[in-house]
Image (cartoon, rainbow, N blue to C red; front, side, top):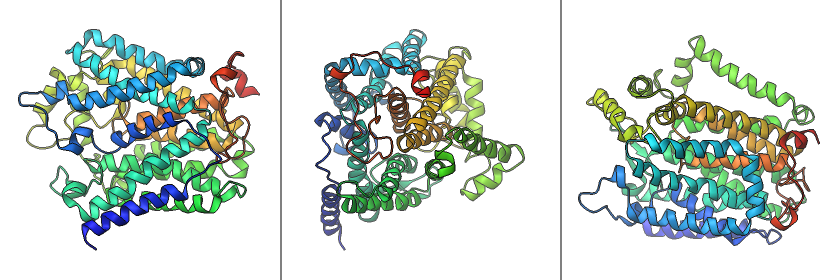
Length: 479
């Protein structure tokens, strides 16, 4: 099959998936296309890269970025803000329920005052708001659960089959070379880790959809929707193998296993056992590392015991941070003296995979930019997110299991990759999990249908119907 015919088959297949997955019983807002388009860009390549538009001569891309990409993200941000202004009361309720997120963004804004390039940091902070407002657009929809399902389907139906097409028939676009000079599959993204990440976040929702459709026999148009979701899951599993991203494979097994385990009747009937399940996973990983299992685990994943050189850069980053308490300022470490010091020490023997501005550890990245204060805020976010996800699981196991999986996967993913910053797919889905879980726990999402995430009856209250006080997380968890 030549490339042109393969492209036609791929386009018809994508259209067929959209057709099979349609559900006229669901009425999500047209504004949902804003986060869909945002994730299409975030999960693949920037607009300037797709169009092949290079910055003008003399432009410092690391400091100034691309004007075209800035305009696109700015337009999406402004459009989403307009939508949220019309949903002001409901959006405010979600923000108030997730105050740790507000503290984090507020501290990032304050840290700009001691950044090496305050202007650059401020522009990056504005861009970082995209993740937050897009998540709010999803959770404030009249049918937020259906919006989440449609979001992952629309993103996955386009990006995953297209990635296979590019890898198989357009090698100049879909394949590249890693830092060791070995060929890698990149698909619609620019490196194998980015490909693995978009497959990971989409496949977790897809697995959740498939599992729900298998058990919910009264779901509208169940057979063809199950066919579409199962096909998408098949693309996801295949691409995880093609991407060869060990972190994403491990996180998919962890997140998928956690979702399936929480569906066991013994756990579903006693949600308190979720704590024991998650604690067992953490302890198992810690014991493996403590008693020499690190080399066994990394070897099984096809990696070195030093995580492909990551431990070396971790040590250099720690020693290069100028202020351990407050850090170097929001997203300022890699454009300041500390980042240059790290590169001088690594020059000539190793570079992070396809990256010039990350430590390949989310916690260390936060430490470099925001210091110990920032790390404490991130810890607060993860702990709060976990508590909210467990509270959501008690009220709605079907939705809560997915939210819990994303919180746990995000915490694990950041051990070997940096994802506590915006824009980033893992940060986006961590925020989505936190906001959704708090909505379920407070009665804003899915209260009418606690058994299945597939039925179109699981709706949130609209902004007009939220005049009564918002329940607190504690009282919601007790109800």
